Image (cartoon, rainbow, N blue to C red; front, side, top):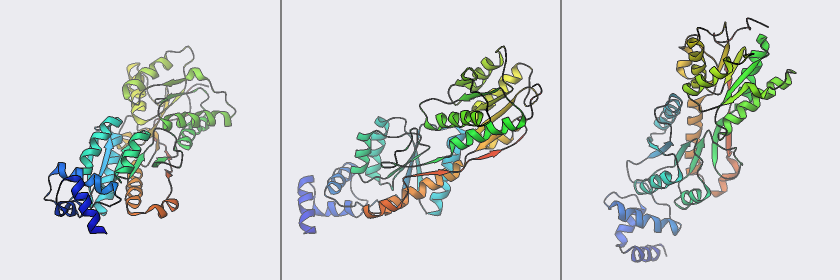
Length: 336
């Protein structure tokens, strides 16, 4: 029956049975377009098509190439892949159109699956990935996971935002401002929720006039900090959504002849390596970026090795713990 099925597939594809067998078993001497066409038909018939020798790879998809945040995640992925004797291909993907182009090429060369940084594909694209039997894990999902569709890995953003704010409250700060990230990112919204929760739990009012939202960049951190510092009653501390924004806050202070923590306490989020090198060294919330990527890699490869019966025993979403790292950018307020 298997031989007959391969014969019918060969007839449908307009190739020989030998070519179909080569594609099925990962043979290398087949033209890419032919491999793609035959491989698609085989998958539609329920066959598992082997990757070509030397293509034991996972794909890391990101729109944030060049950022220190992405560098940490790439590092974690490469380390995990090396342990599994697997290679990593990094591709720039910022939309479902770019994801579709990547998928077409990945199917031809073979892939164990994809890790997507911050980008959650839409339903049509998820169906295409499923049709091609390409597993997907999203790192730092931009929307709150529903627990049923895509596997994902994140961190305890709410607890991190609350820990940074509680630290400032315990130092004696009462006018604590927050610079948040884009509303489109679940992690950023959740960090602000943690900030608000810490204030309420301490019996402090949440003053929305002390909250600004912008991009996760030093430039926006500086600009938004400037608007807060120019207020008639400026804050004594600022909780930033990430380290990059916090560095911008430090720049805004320096431009005014001010300094942290004497004039303003500042906290970040991420604990990038440069956080310990800033002047002053930055108090920040550490999220284990490399460990996030490592966890996502193993989640991905186990999903690739598992059958439908195993799906229920693997978690759909994992959150790694954040930790407050206290350095020199925070201190008790100079004034009440």
